[in-house]
Each structure stands twice: as C-alpha cells, then as structure tokens.
Amino acid sequence: MSAKVLYRCLVGIGSNLGDRMAHVEAAIEGLKEISVFIRVSDIYETAPVGALSEQGRYLNLVALSVTPLDPDALLDQLAEIERRNQRVRGEINAARTLDLDVLYVYGYRSETKKLQVPHPRMAERAFVIAPLLDVDPVVAYSLSPGLADSISRRARTVGDEVADGVVFLGHYPSNSSG
Image (cartoon, rainbow, N blue to C red; front, side):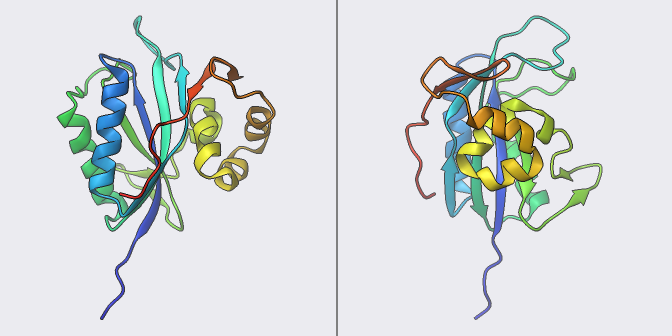
C-alpha cells in the first residue's frame, strides 16, 4: 500500500463585498471539503490595500489546510470556491466577495505564472502576518520577524488594533478537522 501524499498549506481568506462573514464561512466550508484537516485563525478587519476606488473594509483570516491536492490543483479549487461565491475577476484590487490565496506550502516553492509560493508580498502585509501568527507563528516569525514581533506585543481584545490598520474582531467559531 502506498502512502498518500499530503500537502500542508496556508491559505489567505478575504472578503469586503456583500455579506463578508457568509462569504468567509463559505470559503472555510469549501476548504473543509478538500482538506483532511483545517485550522482557522482569528478574524481581523483591514482597510483595502491598493484600492483604485472607494470600497469596504476586508475581513481577513488565514487557514492551515492539510490536503491531498497538489498546489496547482489547490489553486484551481480555490478559484472554484471563489466562483461559487460570485467572485468577479477584472480590475486589480477591486472589491471582492471572496479572495483566496495560496500563501505558503511547506517544503514547496513555485515561481510559475500561475502560482507563486511563497506568496511574494505576504511578509510585508500585516493583514496576513496577524492571522498567520494564530495558525503558525514559526512561519510568521521566519517570514517577517519585526512585523510578527510588533503584532505579538499588542493587546488582543475585540476592537484592538494589532497593527496599523489591522483590527482584531474575535475568534473564528470553529477550528476543527475537515
């Protein structure tokens, strides 16, 4: 009997359009369908980065997913989850019902046009590092030690700003196996 190959991945989850929490929950349910294990960070709210037009604030989370899907197949499935949640691709940095990114795959690198892993800008984004600290502080500190340390030192009660423009909203209600 051959061993099943599993990939341990970090997935960024964001939503700033429509019922943001419903979109986030749908994304997590979709991840559970393709994962053998999932752990979800706390919930953070942030201003949009690089927005070309006026838009709402994002809900941001990071999920640690263990999946049998290779990173390219995972990216395809994340795009399908986005489509099921009315994600429309068009203008860069436009408002989105759902934005799912493969941020990091343990022991794997990719620099193809389709998939860049680790995500090229994750280390400089507090809205990624804050929730990443919840699911894998070792990776957060290895990618961005100064930012991770700064966020870790701030208070974490609902409504607190844990980094410039990143507000802690609370714990995600369910952290369980898929």
